[in-house]
Length: 430
Image (cartoon, one colour):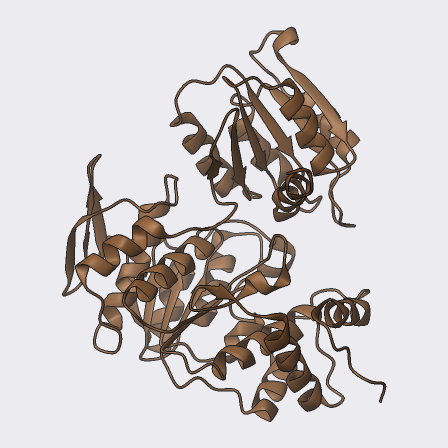
């Protein structure tokens, strides 16, 4: 056997090269076999979070509140923007290169002849790292779907499904019912199964009931109410009043916060948190790229919205921001997304479109995408509307910045790659 990589970049390069040609290989038998060989288990409560949109926000709120409560918290969240280490957090800090290399070595030593995809290998490594860190609680974000996601080889104490909408149809099915069933795959018999989607698919409810999970539904088992200043959470046996709005901006954040508080209600004997910890946790929570409004002018907004549900929320959030003379969009998207569904809510909001090619073979062609946007009906006067294609998100953003005044705003959206490309370009120019 050749010697193993000794640095994180070389390890990631090796993993990418091993599976450069493979599709997503659904099925958990291989991952489970390596998990068992590692004897990977958690000696603390595990919260698992799935959902079309909102899972990152929910995970971050849970982490923030539990850190305020003085607990040692582990978080696995994805994808990353600038550094792979962003995916593994211990006590709010990114895992070190050294810790990740050690975890990669552990997986490699135990996998034998079993072939693992990049995602499966890195998921096992990060879960291995977290399992060795002496934590009080672990929060695991599901990557794709739920039932067949590599994270699902672990048994959670509490499962959350934030929202169910159409995305990744080629793997999860083309209806909310099929997708709801896939996401309900993270539920466990006798354990709390929380769903914060206001209209949960019947398939999700049926699956939870069929396996004997303890199903918590929004509006039945937990709820929220709010005015302009503050909001209240009500659960089965716990109320939390006079809460601050989460620092994460956007229309759906109270749904996500309510799901987080329902999970904490379930775990209140193992992980009690007081009112002040909840308030502070919600105020200080940070999550890059989710309706993230940067300081300064012109206003710059990062949003990873890449499906119709998230795009509709983005349009609503932009509408709530007040007046701006022009809205510039830096937009790049994967070809396999429902592109018309993503564009529709924003057609009347954006004046100037800067369409970017993304650094992925799955990227939609920027020139063709620009032509498609130019053909969309618009109320704007021709001189107030432009559509251009660019080779990458950095170039698209630089052009928008050169044309925008301090009374304008630039919204960067469509994919993690779009936001990461702009973040990275801005980092090198600052």
